[in-house]
Image (cartoon, rainbow, N blue to C red; front, top):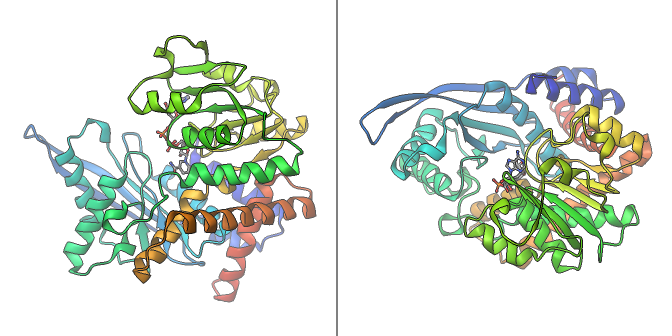
Length: 411
Ligand code: NAD
């Protein structure tokens, strides 16, 4: 399926059918509640003038204000933003976060902008979006955005409204009202989920052979946590390709080199492996933590891992999902496995509202309880209805959204 929003709707309707969800709720969820489509302008450092397409989708707010990601990428489309808005609705609902799904962005190559230009479009995004505040919609970070952009967005919001309001923007640094632990949240959440799934599928993580595709913020973090408990991370990769050592790679050493800017393919002294072959390695645990659609109908039959935990968003296509299910390989889906960042954004909001800032132990303890709760709820429904974890996670989320929609009298 080419259109990313159509694929998202396909997932919605499949899960809705399997979970016997009220068809009126599915009809309501078949389009976003509100779409903002606007222009962001930029006077370039060299004197040029640019006008960029910008979007913000408030997909559904039955469970709470719409929240999360702002993507600055050159090929952004409104359909992509709508699909991501629906995914965020599901991710928040399955994780028990009282929020709806929001997503937005600017169609721009942020890597080509100077800091002044990036600041200019971040502020312009907020001025032109005219956000109504933390009770309505809260933009967070995503690809191409981060601490810097979120600090500027928060400052712009506060300059325009004249009110200090850290809860108006998510994914900002602790210095301006963010939370500790946000950078590691997604990787740590995947670690907690992996422990649960390994127990249910009788995999001993100590000594387990692990393969991680993508050695960025998410992949390097989860590889580090598994390394710490004695798993053997035998292969990792980045966009340049992968490296393999059947005796186990030195993950802290690799993380240091990558942080210093090294590409894995350029490192001397390691056996190299392509990203394609890496996915097909015989191992206990495979964590795709790079990009979407890497496990697809072409390679799914060659996957030999005993368990797949999705770190990336959408790494497994629907066709591959079916093939893996037939092969008996369990897949822990993205909406549950990588929800740690979304959950910790919720903690960022609570801390901003209360002015009571937590220590890292409190953040981690709450994250563990909340994300393993999402896993257990999905696991129970997968047993109850004999569904894959992906379908059961969506069913858990849709039941929660459905109940709120019905009680509000929307359908
Ligand atoms: P990142 O940019 O820090 O790291 C991405 C890694 O993947 C890098 O090592 C990069 O070289 C590699 N990569 C990029 N394209 C690749 C390709 N075609 N083949 C193989 N490797 C490739 O990004 P991240 O924050 O670690 O995010 C990774 C994935 O996790 C993305 O799918 C993202 O949407 C998802 N995700 C991230 C978060 C978060 O909090 N960062 C939360 C939820 C989901």
